[in-house]
Length: 75
Image (cartoon, rainbow, N blue to C red; front, side, top):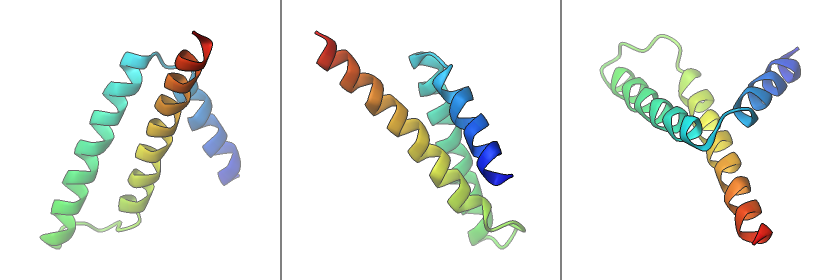
């Protein structure tokens, strides 16, 4: 079941434009900052949200790198 959800997230990200991916990256980095702040101040209840957010950031960065490689290789 978790694999299906992950595949859906990846497909949703692949459908995004470059600008939308950049916005998603900024949104996830802000979320990570907020989660870390809440963790330090002992307000964070779900500590597993931090690694999940890091993985989401990595997914977005990977897709952005794939696209830039394709653009460079396609010239």
